[in-house]
Length: 429
Image 1: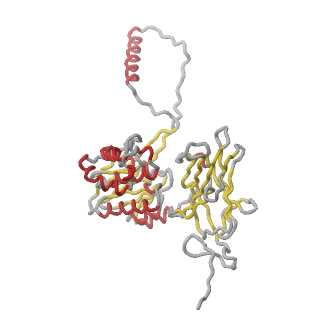
Image 2: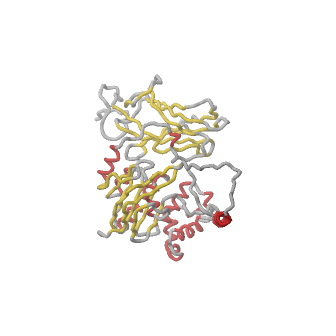
Image 3: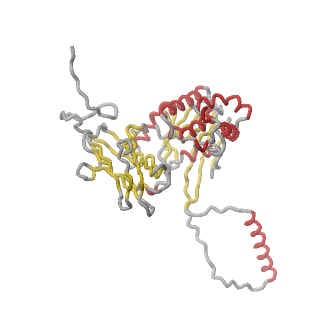
């Protein structure tokens, strides 16, 4: 059980920012031969050569960006290790290197055993093929033999709960159905090493619980799991050990509760200009730029108080020339463990914005008698225009809630949990 199955030594991954990465096609090779021949002719003829065009010096403005730098760790057989960190810390890059999707710029990785990975939902699925056909296609891509896929076919379908749609092209599947089928194929690969990246970011609560159960079963079967997630509750439940990545480097390893505590002590992302965020989804007809906290008189606040009137001002831009139609906005509130506490959604309140003029720059969400108990909470912003996602920024920032007189008794609301609930007591005989 102490056998090392993953060994990473001084792993680094460098990307070029702001410049084009050169590549060679066949025509480039042929052109190179021609240019070489011309240069040789000029050299041997020793004839003067005059260039009628002014010389142009190309300046490469590309910058080196190290997504990972000097990353070293070891994982033993049967361990379930969480990899946590903020967006851009290098978590997904590390899993892609371990999956051999991309090569490290420097360093060495030794893997001992069959590797299965679920890094992007539905990778290897063909939209025109049916669910049945994609099970065989995706299974083959992941390294399963046809006989193995046939043997596990019924289990894969039962786990994914897509039996009724098995002979339907997956382009007609919802994102949840797509993900269930993709996870089910990968989970039944029975690899010695399973790499999972944010599989719980989508899907209903029942399926998330099912995924956790499957990964737990994989771990108890003696296989090794590397689990990347922003859901700290899931990481704490599943993983015995953890690695904390920050700016492409491992800053802490150890038992999961200790590493999660160190992660929470890091400065949580404050409201900022979200236009610089490139880890977002949507067609871009609306783009969130940030959010601020205000009181009932529209004054800016550094934090809210439990029981006060709280207003979230969500700012955005409309890059197009046309007004936005049938817009729905939601603000998800998470605790620091990544668990969703509440969602503020104008569809739920039946306040769909039929038309938003280009002059509108922000939307106000008012919460009377804020029921959140003291603590720090994360924010996810989501917008839909018509039937399409316009913008979706996860972990868009955070806000603090201080103690307040929620019950109007002069006592500050404190205690366990996250929500204050209005209630009363009475005796009955």
